[in-house]
Amino acid sequence: MKHWFAKIAGAAGAALLCIAFAACTPSAGMGNARAELLESDGTRLVVRVTEGDMDKNLYDVLCIFEQNGEIAFDGTQSEYGFYLTSLNGVEADAENYWALYTTLGTLDGVSYSDASYGTWEYDGRTLASASYGVSGLPLVEGELYALIRTSVA
Amino acid sequence: MRPSQQIALSAVMCALLLVAQFVLSFVPGVEIVTALLLSFCVVFGWKCGMLAATSFSLLRCFLFGFYPNVILLYLIYFNLFALFFGTAGRRIAAWVCPALLVPVAAGALAVALAQIPLSASLLPGLRGAAWALFAVACALLLLWGGLLAGKREVRAATLAACAAFFTVFFTLLDDVLTPLFYGYTPDAALGYFYTGLLAMIPQTLCAAVSVVVLFPVFARIFGGGRKIPPQTLDE
Image (cartoon, rainbow over all chains, first blue to last red):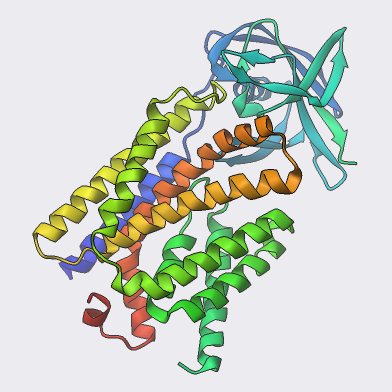
């Protein structure tokens, strides 16, 4: 009886550990970063970072904007971070998705975007297709980040 | 076992695997498919295992979508998995555990300490997961050593080490198949490999922990279904 109890307790403990480990979410707030919402509607969202913080990312900014009632978004968490599927009530579907672009190029030897996979122009600046999702883009001062509703075709 | 029994058992196992994967797909990094299929293969052998693995690999597409590279990955990986654990699972040598855990621990330590060209936002999480995997690999080694010194059964620890090694192999296989299938440039393929570590480390950690904890439970349940006495499974 004790033997079975120990096994079940061990299994439950391991499961709780895994779930707790998997359920970790980014810390609240933007830290030392400051960001400005330039545009937000059913086809695009553009953010400019006015003060950077490498410990925070675009997902943290979106959470703050959502808390303030400026935007609405939805998606799922995965091992790669947050996968955004809906923005301002517009869902991604078989024909359209939300593509992420940024002016953040290569920083400290890491490439955060790649123009060969697509570009988008805004206010005289060229944003390249992001190499990561919203959770993988750190907040760098002066950079632009944009979510654009894009056709799959 | 009669063919009709093998088919029926494999069908039930396939359904169980589909439910297990679907239910836990909402929890990143957590899965029990490895522990379930491993236990099934050890108890019922490679034929039932490969039947279940092939049907699972194909039927899961109805839940998760039809992606040719993923179908190919699953068919290759899970059939090799079933073949290995269905043939060697019951008579795996004790020395296999440290032989596999040492490279897993070394790899985890390397990932935790190396300067990996990955997003600054994702690197802390990856390093944390790598340290956790290193800790679990060391704990498994200690458990194995303790059980061996006490002349106790070490098969669960050894199978957990094999499961961890196979999980690493799964991601490495994907790192070859997906870039080949989509025609990635070498730089993009390397980026895909580094990003893949974000999934590999938690999945390996989960596989090792789930097998060492759940294998004795599942083996007893499946063994009961096959009318195998518990002491025979432990031999």
